[in-house]
Length: 214
Image 1 (cartoon, rainbow, N blue to C red):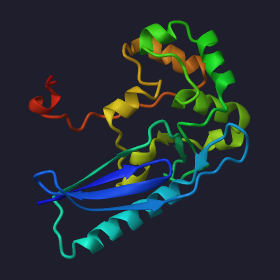
Image 2 (image 1 turned 90 degrees about the vertical axis):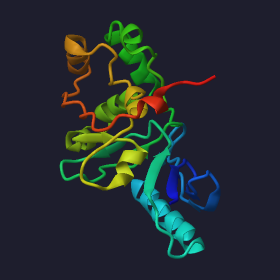
Image 3 (image 1 turned 135 degrees about the vertical axis):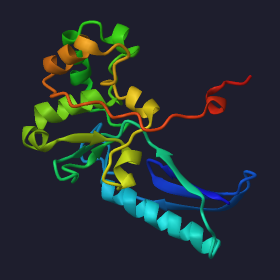
Image 4 (image 1 turned 60 degrees about the vertical axis):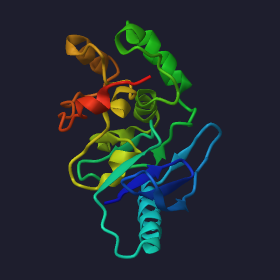
């Protein structure tokens, strides 16, 4: 039985229907707009992502009428900060991975958070999510007061009522710390981000899938 693969890209959503033997049975792409309201800014409306998913999935299924699908996999652009309120509504356009407005916030993180590189394994870069959150906090305080959850593109379009993110994407979000404990709480307090419980691990890959092969 085939599966659907959904790639939530920066310029559009591509969906493929893949057979068990790996053959691509059908594919379709639905484009959506990119907004650059100011220099270095890059934003999208998460509603456009959902419309792209719906349009591309419908186009694929129309090519294979009556097909039964065994499962759906979704992935795509990382570091797209999607800010949600307490009612799980989007409070502003998503700030994308290629947005470059928050260099000052990156510099601030390195100045104020000692051991950032040691503890996280990375520098704070403008494409990452934590500097974007600081930017919203400093420049859009009214919006920031509404924020209760931060999702990436894939998590934003799942629409199940329960938030999920891939571990790879969570780790790259700068607020997932390799050695958590008191150090993490100190970092969050220093940048004035109220901590919430980390997402529960609900699934793990099989041992065979985790093994690397040359």
